[in-house]
Amino acid sequence: MNIRVQYFALFREERGCSMEQLDTEAGTPAELYAELKAAHGFRLEAEQIRVAVGSAYVDMSHPLQDGDTLTLIPPVSGG
Amino acid sequence: MRFEVSQDPLQPDRLKEELRQHAAGACVCFEGWVRNVNEGEAVDGLSYEGFEDMVCAEGGRILEEAKARFRMLDARGIHRLGDLKLGEMAVWIGVSSAHRPEAFAAAAWILEELKARLPIWKKEAYIDQLESRWVGIKDRESSLQQRYARQLALPGLGEQGQERLSRSSVLVVGAGGLGCPALQYLAAAGVGQLRIVDGDDVSLDNLHRQILFGERDLGMNKAQAARRRLLDLNSSIQIEAHGHFANPDRLPALLDGVDLVLDGSDNFPSRFAVHDACWLQGIPLLQAAVHQWEGQLNLFAEANGGGCLRCLWPQEPEAGCVGSCADTGILGVSPGVVGLRMATEALKQLLGLPEALGAETLWLDLLQGDQQRIRRSQQEDCELCRRRSLGQVDGTTDLLHPASAQLDCLRDALWIDVREAEERVEEEAFLKRFLHLPVSSTAFDSYSFPGERDLLVACAAGARARKVQAQLLSRGLSRKILVWAAPISSLRAYI
Image 1: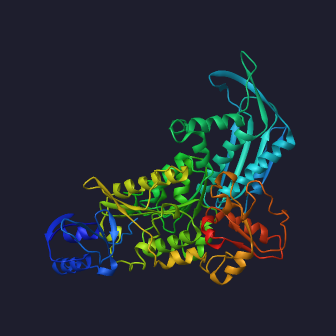
Image 2 (image 1 turned 135 degrees about the vertical axis):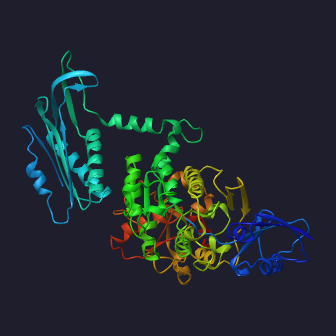
Image 3 (image 1 turned 180 degrees about the horizontal axis):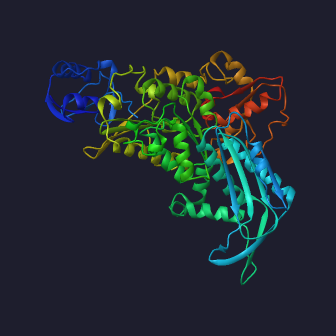
């Protein structure tokens, strides 16, 4: 399944890019995040982040579909 | 605090001596003299006429108002009446304060008010004619017309919109990278009351992004420094500076009477505390944050149906989990742009424009020049939303509130709607449940309520209801006075 992953804020900084296309077997954002965290050493735990599919926030258990855009959103507090 | 008039040449030294006190570290005195030219015409003297009692009373009021607006200690003023020669002193004012900025600012403000409001007429003895006048109140109104002329001309704003802005009260939490630009434009646009809270002092590494401040402000409290600069920008509005952090115990006073809160603070504890208090009291909150080249903006308001911050983040993130501006780096323009978006959304919200930010997070990527909107939704299991729907409010506030245990007493109470007539847009069946006593036209300190039931006071968000409650409590009535600390519409569930 092909998923486009978009990185916001801290994730962009940690990943070094704002967007990438992935082939994955992960069926949910939780599974995909576990893969990405293992691969790139993201410091935030899954419970500390929010995700969006398309243009809406979704649960970590939301079923992913081929062609989805998943956005990883960390907390942000800079002022 | 005293204002005098004199028919004799002014000798203000004794007034200046009266200003002396140990707490005063600064005294600013101003003398206005008769000069030889006015608007291009040669003058060789003038005479002032006025009703002495009225001049003293109005002058005294202006000094009292100055004391309420500025952190000054004391003030005196005196105005000359009668015939004056060139070089004679026409007016003198003196202000004492702990520090010099307040004394300068208060003196400047007092002088402008005196010129605009004192019932004194000036006849200038022009060399070739005899005609002139003292600047009157009408000129002040026309200067406001001129100040806002360009925005008054904007479709959707106009005089009504300007009036709405001038009656609005906004709390800005954090006069930092986001707060500075937002404050500048809110002050410039004529938002009538700005309350600024920030416990930090201006430091050199702030100046690249917090451009409200200059080098002379280094070491000064940010809220105070912001207030000084903003009054220079627009002295016709009221600005309060609170030089401490927005801790939970301070929030009830900070939120009192505000229509909208802008939060650009730089830490999660402050953001969540401010948010929770706003949400429980039904005060709309615009919250923004930045990270390097990115920024996000949310409007948490019941009206947009997108739920609250806790619907999105039930638990407050750990401090330091994502780094601060100091750790991750930031260019000044990022909070600058996001702060201006805050100001834009704030003005839209205050003006009641339908295009105000909805149930979505606005995400800006300034490096790519992109923006995205991510839809939010209210979560059924949100604990804060549940508490709000029950009208429960934190014990840290001084509200009497209808908690779940008091629901019977809530149902039995006499419900009072203190909103203005034009705000009552709900269905007739709902409105009939209330005694309508608009806050603008009811004297709550003497109103005689029918029956003996407890009173439940409600308004659009809870702020006005709380003011009415305070007035009623001061009467020592024998019944309970409850405030509905949430939008009035949420009372539907209890009909």
